[in-house]
Amino acid sequence: MVTFLAGGTGTPKLLAGAADVFPPDTVTVVGNTGDDVELGGLLICPDLDTVLFDRGGVLDRETWWGIAEDTHETNTELFALADAAGLDGGPRYLDPQQQTTGREISRWRRFSGVAEFMAIGDRDRAVHITRTSLLDEGKTLTEATGILADAFDLSVTLLPMSDEPVATMIHTPGRILHFQEYWVARRGEPTVDDVEYRGADEAAPTPSVMDALDAPVVIGPSNPVTSIGPILSLPGVETALSHVPVVVVSPFIEDEVFSGPAASLMRGIGVEPSTTGVAELYPFADAFVLDAADNTKLDRHVVKTNTTIDTEADSKRVANAVADALSEVQ
Ligand code: FO1
Ligand code: CA
Image (cartoon, rainbow, N blue to C red; front, side, top):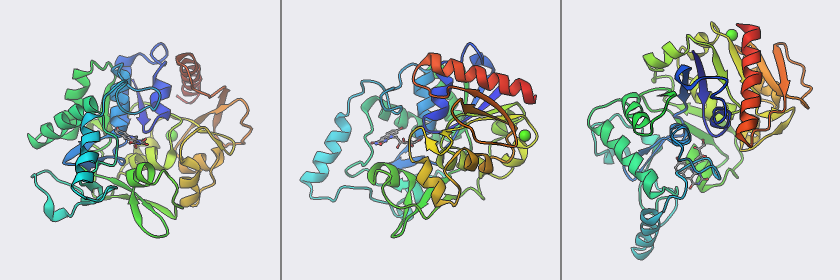
């Protein structure tokens, strides 16, 4: 058995061609839920959905979010309606008093559906309606995710990191923004002063997640601050990781990041944006897979390969390097 911690695109890309190396029925994926938002009453879990859709064979691999060739009729209509009604667009936070369901809801991640600021596809939306309805029926997020995983015929086990809400909040000079407002509405442009995992102290990793953290753990080339940080912020997770072999694929080549906002977010929390900085954030990690061109000196086992992942052949090569690293530290 092996457990992958996943968020954003790094780990899903690693999983995309890893089946020969890590048979899917031996793989558990723990997904970040710090990016989750409630938008127009629907719970959207982007990082769970990227794994759900990619392992289910329907992911839009141009963007690595949403469903391939989805239509956006409802989203377009929401804009037209807001415009016609003279309502302001952009992210509109909801007041917690307006809470309409009995579910435990974190006010920090609730947005109005007026002029829906994230481009939710129509088929994608069907997933959010199903998930939210299952929660309203009293299921946990773990149960709802399991039901969706069956619907998409997943052969890996997919688990949310927690059944309780955690919100990744980005502190910027003027305001504190939810991650999706920072990333989607503000295109990652505001200066990052700090990053906060709101709710993490009161949230718990689920029992299934704690069981999964008894197996060797792989952290793919995901953003350490917004993809993996929320998982590590949950009580007990770092301690669990210190007791099992952990292999990390660096999302950097020395100080050059492959993609996304990792560098400015790391700088924002006062960590050097580089492989060295990633190693500081993962003191429990036993081995690192680094790019062949990355000459960072680390006090851990290191396996080198070309870590660029564009194709499934790339992903298989990196997965083999991960397996080599695991066998060295197991
Ligand atoms: N990212 C964007 O840049 N723009 C969008 O409109 C957008 C919509 C969206 C809808 C559903 C979903 O699951 C993800 C979506 N994303 C969008 C991606 C998302 O903001 C982030 O890339 C992830 O949260 C990072 O892990
Ligand atoms: Ca360890």
